[in-house]
Length: 232
Image (tube, rainbow, N blue to C red; front, side):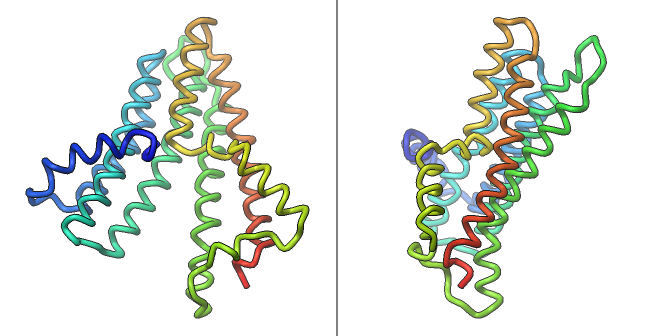
């Protein structure tokens, strides 16, 4: 999404910030707040809540582009900034999926709240976080054992069957549905379908599907790391 359109927007925002006292880390904090606010935004019933969720995630994406661009322009690089950026990504992905689960539970409906959907949304959020953690922990493991950062070639599977499966998963890109940006757009589509049907059928179906994708991808991603040379 950044490459498709947001870089065009962020570069226009940068010109108003480069000569101010605003720091990249401050922008990263604001980015994280916008991402987390997607969860309460999704609690607003109907299409309006889904649109608010998309808006908060798009603001998150905009600031995610801007903070790095400002850091490079001002030459204000820091490990803290990299760390905060990763935390923001974790929290945003989780917030969108938790918000989806609570939305599917119908908190403001006239009937009984069905907490099963909230559980499934939280399960999807946990899976999305674990997928990111599995990738990041490769770097942690290599650093703690004195090895250099992983090279791209190390991601190749040692087994031809695993390599084929990895290429198929990469081509389908179904795993991206549990990321905050893509998930928020899917939630909007589901909300429109629900409005036409008059209930939460599609939102609940989407919640179950994303929970399943997150769990399957968590396992597959772990297997792909262990089957590659990234930990050798």
